[in-house]
Amino acid sequence: MRDPLDPQNPYRGEYAPYDAWIYAHAWQQARSGSFSSASDQLYSIRVDSDGWPQPMHVTAKHDLCDDGHITKPHCYNVISAYGIMDQDMSAQQQQDELAVRAGNLPQIPAWLADQTPLQVMVLPDGEVVTLGKLGSAPDASRAGSYYRYSKDGVELGHTAPGAEWWTLYFAGFDALRQAHEKDSYWEEDLGCVQRFNSTSGQVRELYDYHGTRLPGVKPPPDRAPKDYWWLSGTDLAAVYAQQNGGTKQSA
Image (cartoon, rainbow, N blue to C red; front, side, top):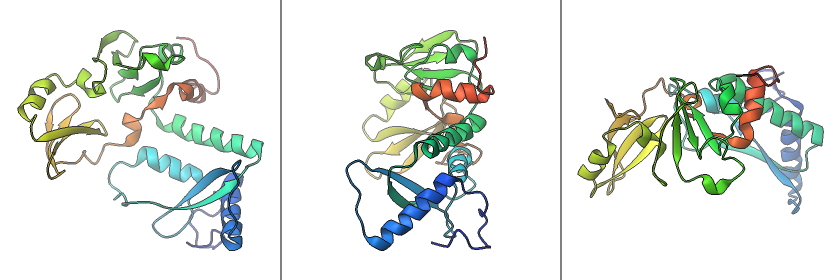
């Protein structure tokens, strides 16, 4: 890992106080060999492929906006520190991370912010998929099905309990699954449904979540996590407020 104070550091001047706090505590704890107590929290900073510690806002945006053109590493290098961060500093870290998400995720409609579900995803075409019906956030026991809503908040359907969200769109999936029932399993990545061979674990076919067969076995390189990002109901109102200048907008 390289020194963040090095003049060659491309992130120099971009570190927030909480980034510096994590780095300083990690360095001190590594030198002393001290251990955490039960009351401590764990904080981490990712290190890029050139060895530079990344500011939180860089990591958070990359996680949302990586469009597939950058080769993802098998694992990430991080530096970690434990302790209790100053309350104001910790609040600023959470606020900054929230601002990064709000600035890169699709616009949340007002009708959705008024009726918080357990989890929600705003799709690129403006439709909304929720885990649990609108207004179900206070009651986790209502999470069994996914619901599909139009841009204007009209319910368009819901899954059977336990079914995947994309079966709301993939009209021919049941027949396709039955045809490959003995040798396949299915997973979704960036809005793409992948058919894996049960024995080899290799991807055999790739479909858009609407059911269109796609070339290759990996999501197209223009797919970004921000376009298929699940927000928890607890974060929804805060992200919505950030997108609207910190205020609640009427529908």
